[in-house]
Image (cartoon, rainbow, N blue to C red; front, side):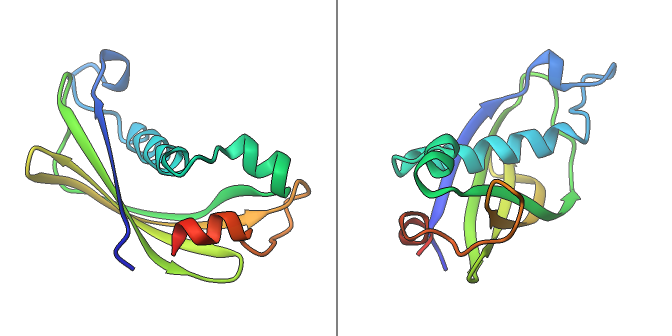
Length: 131
């Protein structure tokens, strides 16, 4: 799969520690925002997926490698790619870059579940987007 989504953000003071370096857990927030923006780019929202399809997308697992630190006021680009798609889950590779420099790489496994948290088939409207 090669569908790619790009999201740009800036590092704010609130994202950093006392040394002006992005706190490690905040990379997960950047990645989440990029995934949400990818969904918005196709005219969907997480709320719409729940209301219209009874579907919630949750993170099953996250593997992240920190290569270089992001710092206060850096401009970052998050590139998200669909890697694999199953019946009720899909995997995304996400990379965070500062200019051309890769500062973080991650693999996120996402699962579609119903309101009770039980895995369900990826709805057609989302499946079309992922493919």
